[in-house]
Amino acid sequence: MRIESHLYCIGSGSFGFDLSDPYDCNIYLFDAGSVYIVFDIGTGLGIERIMEICRQDGLAPQRIAHLFLTHAHSDHAGGAAYLREHVPELTIYASAATARILSTGNEMAVCLPQAKAAGMYPPTYVYRACTVDQVLEDGASVQIGRYTIQAIATPGHSHDHQCYRVSDQERHYLISGDALFFGGRIILQNTYDCSVPDTLASLQRLANYKFDALLAGHLNFSLRNGYRHVASACAFIEKLRCPPSIL
Image 1 (spheres, rainbow, N blue to C red):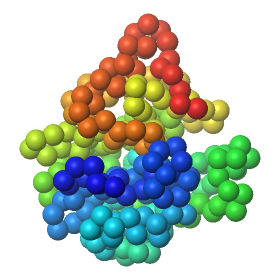
Image 2 (image 1 turned 60 degrees about the horizontal axis):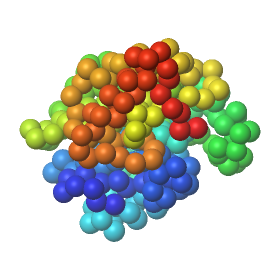
Image 3 (image 1 turned 30 degrees about the horizontal axis):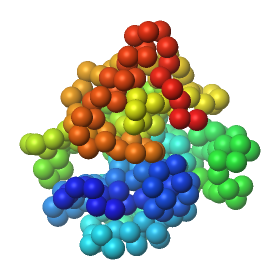
């Protein structure tokens, strides 16, 4: 699904646009010229559909060269091993904590047994291990073609969560994963590493960054005035309240 001349949504589940597998997050692709940059990759269950969507949009899947992961949860990172099978030279970026979880395929660390019991994933789903090639510390930047990609540590939804600000000479895009959603909403859930204080602190931290577009991990995205969504979330925090949760 083409969003802008250089920006596509190549996957999304039932909590979004129903493009790929129902369990997938929103998957964004930036065309950097000779290569593509992808942010999050879903569960892996819809990888063939994602490749098909790329081709339908006139994109060559073999040009996917870079994958940035916001966190290790199955709906965002579970497809990394599947994508690498299609693109062996893929470079994967993530936080150190995400890299540790994904490299071992640790299902307990991503609360997969609990999520399966809650009906959030199929009982037969397997979280496949995959190596992360480059660990990005908070504040680290990567230059790929016209884009500068900056890592922003945002623990709360999960302890390993990291957002990315993607910038060119014209605009700033916030890849917010599960830290922030359209309307200033968040996700709070009963998992061992979901922290209310950390979630709120991360939202206040995001308010320090300029961005035009909000590209969230589920639900809708916002191409203009994206900053208003973090401002809305912070308005709740200033009144000693939590922003509304989408779950």
